[in-house]
Each structure stands twice: as C-alpha cells, then as structure tokens.
Length: 122
Image: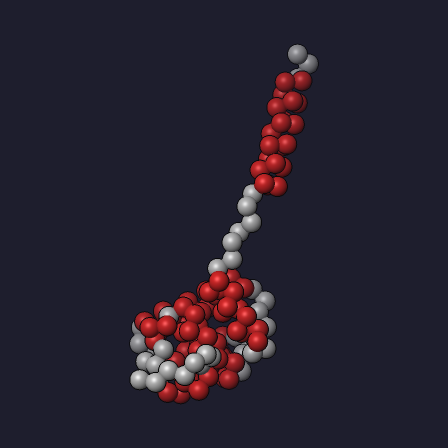
C-alpha cells in the first residue's frame, strides 16, 4: 500500500480541521460588556485588553461585596492602572451600573457625581 492510506488520512484530517475552523460560529458579544466598554471609550479611557478590563469591573463589584467604599476602590484602581482619579471614579460608576446595579445609590457619596446615566435618588 506504499503508505498511501496514512497520507490520505492525514490529508482528510487536515481538511476536516480546516472545515471545522471555517464553519465555527463567531463568538457572540455580550451587550452589557459592549455597553460597559463603550461608556469607558466615550469618556476617553483607553482599553488595551477588553477581557482584563471587564474582569477588573467585576473585581470592583467584589470589592463592594466586601463593603469597601467606592472612593477606596477608585484609589486602588488609580494605583494599579494609569487612570486619573476622575477616570477611576468613572470606571467605578460604570462598573456598578453595568455589573452590580444593586449598589447604585448605596455607595459613599464621594463618587456619586460620576455615575453615568440617570440620577438615582433614595
């Protein structure tokens, strides 16, 4: 058989792999993530790694779950990134609006003026 069956199976495997890659459905975007990233971009916050930025927003919510104040979280974010205090405070507000809206109106007042969207009154 001169090694032809092995060569044929290798070619078939390569073709099937290529077909699988070409026919794979594109990953669907999450509308919440898209809105979050768009809000940051609108404020001029440059995002170099979308997934890391979204993960950081979830870390903000985890910090609020641990009863950290939004001002403390903004200062930590400023320390860990190249964001200004205003940008990091805005990031906190957008994170809350997108991923943990249960904290809207329940955080300390130091960053309330930076929340995007409608004004929430207790």
